[in-house]
Amino acid sequence: MTAGKPLTPVGRKWALSLHLIFVGLWFGAAIAMVLLIALRPSSFESPESLIVHCNCVKLIDDYLIIGSAGGSLVSGLFLSWKTKWGFFRWYWVAFKIIATLMMVCFGAAFLGPWINRTAEIAADLGLQALDSPEYQAANSRALIFGSMQIGLLTAVVVISVFKPWGKIGK
Image (cartoon, rainbow, N blue to C red):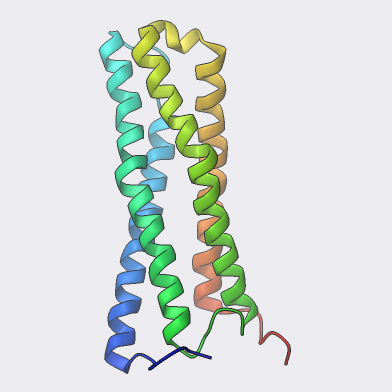
């Protein structure tokens, strides 16, 4: 059930368009960030170049991923609230809500702090950061779990298109 007055067809299209823009921004920013981490040069000419690299990854996370993931979550919840799909009427919608909440929470609790830590270590140690076990661990975790987030986000998008599961509690 929707609370209050449901969206008009035009209102639903605008809300869905905004939601898709946020999802696309999140997906693109996540891919860009993971590629920057994965394709990081093995050596840098100066400490400043390493710091700039780490700060580029951090800026993508701080401004593009956080904003677009939050926008995606809020717009998705709004669509669930104001359309026939509801929050927990369909298995595929419930999966999307839970998966998105998990990604946002995991990103806030782990991915963001790992990325921030690599930038801090690079700023503190310069090129010696590349030999730091703490830097290497945080960078590796960001790469592995960032890639996993992209995989889960891909699954959420595919599920949105195919709507594979039926109603909850027929």
